[in-house]
Image 1 (cartoon, helix red, strand yellow):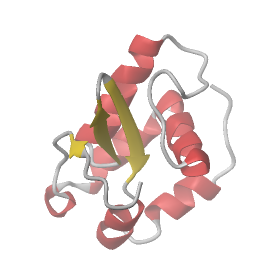
Image 2 (tube, rainbow, N blue to C red):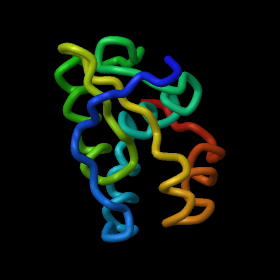
Image 3 (cartoon, one colour):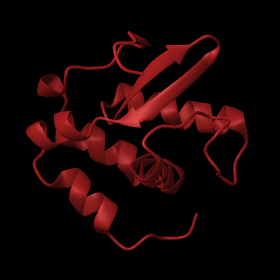
Length: 108
């Protein structure tokens, strides 16, 4: 909502993140599916993302994506909503996210 301030969970400054950390986070098929879902939907949580794994597993994968700098996560009560850091990733690793998202999906 316009003008609304959110509380954000800590995320790394991408200037200090190595490409290997991001690639490792994106290498997992479930995390790659999460990235594609977030790209399509804009934002999601462990309860709203439609994945073939338990919510606790989705939460674990979202944490790895956040700690690697791929997503930013805002806090709304007890819920945590994640979104891709498109602009930050494009600035640090030009073309990487676009290439990952355009690559042919592989089944989970």
